[in-house]
Amino acid sequence: PVMTGYFSSPFPRRVSVAVPVGSVKVGGNNPVVVQSMTNTDTADIDATVAQVAALHKAGSEIVRITVDRDESAAAVPHIRERLERLGMDVPLVGDFHYIGHKLLSDHPACAEALAKYRINPGNVGFKDKKDKQFADIIELAIRYDKPVRIGVNWGSLDQELLTRLMDENQRSLRPMGADDVTREAIVQSALLSAELAEEIGLPRERIILSAKVSRVQDLIAVYTMLAQRSNHALHLGLTEAGMGTKGIVASSASMGILLQQGIGDTIRISLTPEPGGDRTREVQVSQELLQTMGFRQFVPIVAACPGCGRTTSTVFQELAQKIQADIRKNMPVWREKYPGVEDLKVAVMGCIVNGPGESKHADIGISLPGTGETPSAPVFIDGQKATTLRGPNIASDFERMVADYIEA
Ligand code: SF4
Image (cartoon, rainbow, N blue to C red):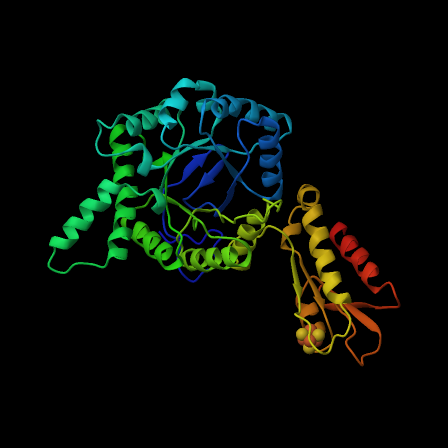
């Protein structure tokens, strides 16, 4: 079946098996889910609750937390409870490495409180059913009826599998390049682990796969292979994407190409925050990516021109920024109060060259005066000229008109 769901790409969405993660469904015909991860010490309950709440408020529909030792496993049920008291039904995913099987079996309240377990086959081992650690964690997932994400990461790729594939490649008549062998090992690691989990008894409706790498072309290649070779729900993410613009561009380029082809059921954009920087930035970037591509709508769009020599003041950039910031700030309340507000389009333009045209295409738009133009600003509402603002308070008058429009 071709699924068009929330997709406006010309490519059909890849058909995957839907997996419930708490109250959120990942895969199937469900919209692509935005998720993120905390960087607090999970044992610090106050800090972790605060960060999960901030990420969720910013739009993270699922939040992953590190569970690396007894203290953090013991903290998980308290974190869950505190979030519930705040009225936040955000599914928490436990990120486990090396000793997840032990932590989950020693801390049943943690196993129960989490909505999903993330395991890394590169560091729990997955050779065969006798491999206790992998089997144990899958059995715990079955017992608590929780989904797992089998998250392969090329930085901790199963070395035994890689070595075997390298040897086989060397003996083959047409050997592949080393990069291709590594990509194959990443894909096989995910698929073999999923196969083993199903053999142990975890249904496909409880398995999500990811295969994170740090290079754009590798990411596109491994996810394309995974998509061709399975119908598991896929979590997309470029690992170690980096800081600032580099991380945003690399993540958007790679994930944009995959999403455009209908590949990917949930995304996380991993940005290295600046020291003291805002962790919620990665959530905003994920939302922007999905919204820009037309797959989901989270916040009203503010269209603004880049400005040029026809604008001598910065009034319109400041106004565009202020409106964008106000909208983001008010969204949690507006979403409840004004259903559909996320579909709103506002235009803030620098002069009459493109201003009136763009404003007419928006729900509400303003064309500020450029150099040499009369100091007046026509405002368009629903495609019609509504009024012309003049004087020193054009910006604040327009802000009020936007608020009135939303309310109306
Ligand atoms: Fe320049 Fe006017 Fe175009 Fe904005 S709308 S970029 S100010 S010409």
